[in-house]
Image (cartoon, rainbow, N blue to C red; front, side, top):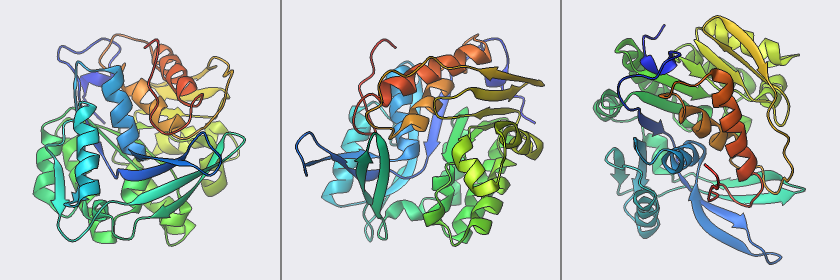
Length: 314
């Protein structure tokens, strides 16, 4: 269990430092004209870092990944620094580039096509010393099931070792299971590996629809219990627009988010929710207030196209 002040009911004495680990990709998102696409940069853990920086410009937000040395990788890093994200822990590879994905929309629901065979981020865990250094200089470490899925077995083991060590040294570790079966050999490999990482984390933020589909959870309570039994001290089960169930400090409670009036594109709904939740961890807020704030951020994001949306009323 963690001793981190960022899970206590009172605000800690020091400001939160945030490190997000994963893959940023070129995003081709539908434009306004039929058949038109707009290029940007996005990826689940990068999206969370971007929203975290937008919500909390007063804190240090860092991103840990690996990119190429080509022009598109340069442009990606410029995007990060322009957003105020610290890229001191971004490594570069002369033999790789960055991945690309394309979004297709149908009544606000999105599907993706990916091209990531040459993605340098697949080697992000190859330098264990760099991982340890990055984790040692932060307070809250965030990764996802996609972060884990893109790595080879050796990379997964190295990342898990680094996470476990960081937690032993008092760092708070947060994890979104973000189940993407196309990135795994089979469901068994995916679910077993996801649970290995969940056991090393303090905060787990799963989405019930994915958990039901791949773990066979019959209810949102089943999802919460599985991650809590794995050792997470805080579990927040996202549920689309439905009630959110959380467990924290021995308490299990349901939170009803405000109704969503407009859905344009659900891309980054969970990523922005996570940022909204993390943004309140160093404040003396109730869990319910943190979850409601996160829900309001996600509602803004799904009312516009693309993964990264300029926020209002934050």
